[in-house]
Length: 258
Image 1 (cartoon, rainbow, N blue to C red):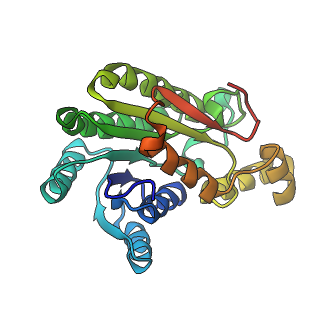
Image 2: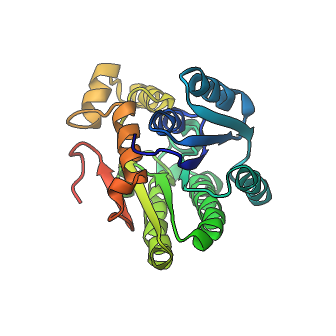
């Protein structure tokens, strides 16, 4: 196992990516504390993990509510004595953020993903770091996407939000590396298993008439599976990747080069 006895807190654990990462972490021996804005989806993931022999607890925590995140972390610390991994995988539905050309989009809709993603990543990261610094160890992780590095159409403020998260990953690492804390992002692209991709496909179908098969072919040279992304998250969170920090791992399957 790559994560034996590690204590991981996952934000957005009820989503496709957060749930996949939670299951993968638990499968490699981590004790996972799952959070989400709604309790029910997170409970489903936790029950799956426990039924498979893993250790998981679910809690309703809004990752934009700093006092709520802090209270939950303190509860984890009371039980475990430490937090080894903080993984932020929160998301917003595409209909709230895109589907409209920038020239026609209002400022509020453009700003929504920027303020939401950056606020959540910052507050979960800096609160986790405060508890990791005394232990001189820990891994802080998040997820971005291809629009952080490549121009895309009808994505509103999503691309700037992803680029900001990657910049924050570098800045956090610059400050936290001397304390033994690693900060790494994952940049997957176009995973058809996620509801987000289904929503995006519907938007493209309306605007350009693309079928689902044409859409997945348009995404990348080869689309990535959720378990591939989750397995990479496990490796990055493990001690096997102790030499990696301050970067975002390119999982775009060749769609963009670093």
